[in-house]
Image (tube, rainbow over all chains, first blue to last red; front, side, top):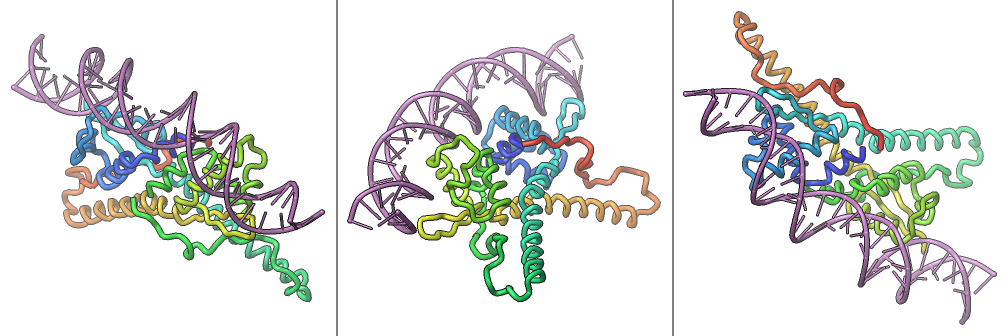
Amino acid sequence: MELVFKALADQTRRNMLDKLLQSPGITLGELIEGTDMRRQSASKHVQILEEAGLVHVEWRGREKKHFLNPIPVREISRRWLDKYNEHQADALLSMKDALEETPENVRREQPQVKRGPEVTSFFTPIED
Amino acid sequence: MELVFKALADQTRRNMLDKLLQSPGITLGELIEGTDMRRQSASKHVQILEEAGLVHVEWRGREKKHFLNPIPVREISRRWLDKYNEHQADALLSMKDALEETPENVRREQPQVKRGPEVTSFFTPIED
DNA sequence: CCTTAATGCAGCTTATTTACTGCCTTTATA
DNA sequence: TATAAAGGCAGTAAATAAGCTGCATTAAGG
């Protein structure tokens, strides 16, 4: 995972992933079209993306075709998004259990399980 | 998004997010328990996570409570995972259309829409 | 074959990042 | 009110990363 996050930390590489999503199978030359980067630099970026498992390549003669691999991103999603939702569910269940176990003490104290913040209240997304 | 990916690029900060997922509302002191880091370093990390919108804080007197905000991770997932799946669906639809439009020419050539790689075939996840 | 196109590797310079020490501000509490 | 706890800010040295130039390697195509 270290390699994945390091790879995603650079905007040039993120743009490359976007381009590969839209145009699967393009070559290095097509990848740098519209940019002012040298092929050598782009090649290093591609290597970093490959080592992170974010890009899959297939050779056709002297041409190297590049594809986005979504699996590492899925792992990221699982690590925090899915787990966060599970915890939210657990918190609700604990609260429900507490209510059912001591129905006469319902209002005595707040539920022990600390819920996360409301997911829509305090974050304003920022563009890349 | 730049700030989000930079924030996620450091293992210390990713461990912090894991800890906040498991223990919402903990303070800086609790965050560095079990590590050999100074509070000053951890404080800088927290600041980076806050500026990225990955961590939400609430002040209680002199204590600062920290919470994981999952929204930026959801944006990452949308950017590549969801879009990737949409493209896959588009590719399948295009193939289906091609088959229906020229049923007698089905085997003449391969479908034009380039599909992405098999998502389970070439990637072996790496631990953090 | 021989030339050209597509790509990779090595080395260098500059900019960014990290963790540290030292000091300051704010808030409980004895 | 004095003191300790929780946290922030500034500055510095070492490690990391990004882009460049130059050269090497492999495969198409006449």
